[in-house]
Image (cartoon, rainbow, N blue to C red; front, side, top):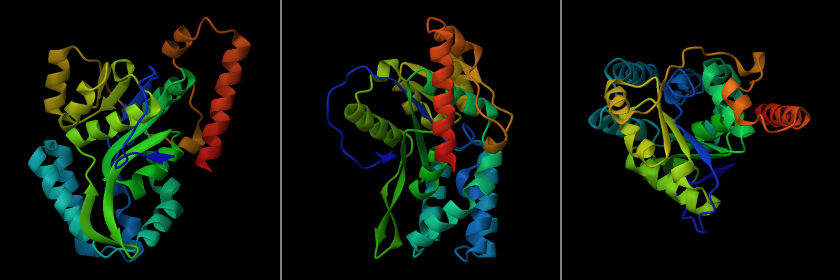
Amino acid sequence: MADVSGSSGGGQNQGRIAAFFDLDKTVIAKPSTLAFSRPFYQGGLLNRRAVLEGSYAQFLMLVSGADHDQIERMRKYLAAMCTGWDVAQVRAIVAETLHEVVDPLVYAEAADLIADHKIRGHDVVIVSASGEEVVAPIAVAIGADHTAATRMDIEDGKYTGEIDFYCYSENKVVAIEKLAAREGYDLSRCFAYSDSITDLPMLKAVGHPTAVNPDRGLRREAAARGWPILTFSNPVSLWSRLPSPSSTTVATTAALSAAALAAGIVTYRLLRRGKAV
């Protein structure tokens, strides 16, 4: 899986289609950084105070909606918190606890939507302000093709506390435009999904934006612009079910023969299972 958050793309737009998904509260029901606080605490990376402060900050964002100032404070807090952490240890903890922590949090509706896009031949991209060491493994587990995430500065295998690329707000557009140039996506034909008003630039950058579990600000914008609004409310274990195509996908692919459609579904499910193991 390619990380495009800091890369410079090239190539010509050839009209391919991608679906860009925010991660927290769009694909998974809990903020990814908060989800791993217990494993990080058990691994000695966090102390009890840091866990409590991080949980409280995330709680305030959940109940009030995250504005720019809140996100900026959280960014500085997280950068300072992880200063000196061993990157290899972080990656090992995420790998060891990924399915225990994240697997039960994936919205069934998001899993179905991702499966629909894959069957229709669209690339799936996770675009998140969380750190790439957390985002990339989650993206692989849910079958995404690419990821763009915040990248921390690293020296001698440890985080310095500085941020190399902050994948937030307008920077998400920077990331997806670079990926579009490299992969040949036509953004006017692409899709984007998010819950937060801070992702308005990303939603405006594509031809088919959708608000998912929107905060107050995004709900107002979506209503004013006539964008679809979806509610995802059913977190399930990816291990307990396999994604099935929705009626929308069936209608879209009705021209295909039944055998070809079945073969495509089986192939996708096998690829998804292989990535999740």
